[in-house]
Length: 120
Image (cartoon, rainbow, N blue to C red; front, side):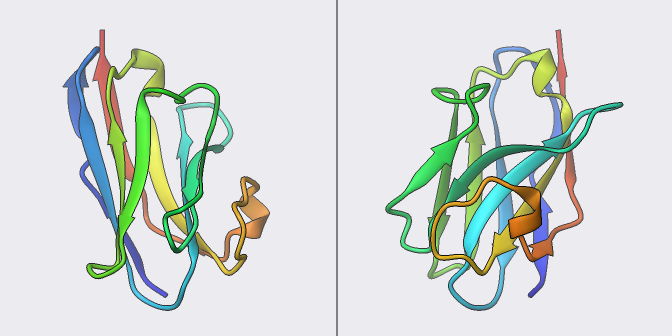
């Protein structure tokens, strides 16, 4: 499975970005994680293969939306109302689980990461 994340960049606080992750392969649960400078990687959001179930970290709930287009084998993370504390490298990941998982160790494949920088 190859994962390719894209869409990162520099944005002002309050702005928006949409990350994309191209994911070939079978029916995976897809997740987004992020790692800020000097911090551990943390869970952001996840979505089941059907798209019927999603889950968000409290820190992004109401601002970020995860979605997927299986016809295009792509998962998206729409990020609105961005804050400086959202600055991080964002990673997409795929899990062979069939239910939502939030733990890094439950994800089997990882993309290379895309940097999001939010200026104040």
